[in-house]
Image 1 (cartoon, helix red, strand yellow):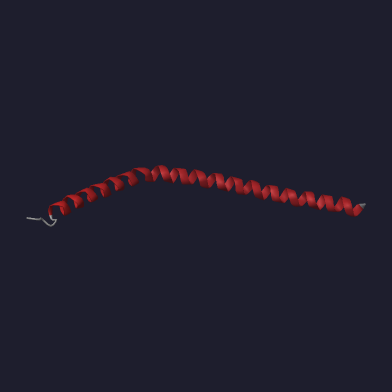
Image 2 (cartoon, helix red, strand yellow):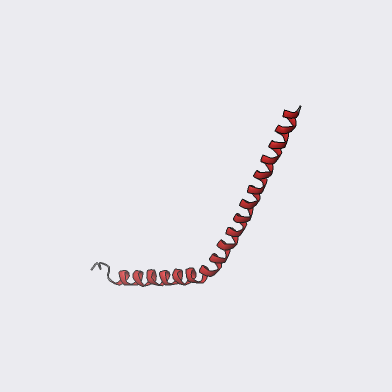
Length: 73
């Protein structure tokens, strides 16, 4: 009977350790999500500026290639 009580106690202690580890992982994931959100907010204006510049370059390239194309007579 002592062995049964001892195994239940050790099992409970093991589950408590796993619960503490799971809670620490949960806190770390929540902190990482906050950091990613903050980084996304900081980079969004730069991403939009780069996207607009890329669109302007594509438009400029298209207008140049349209004039330099082969003309049929």
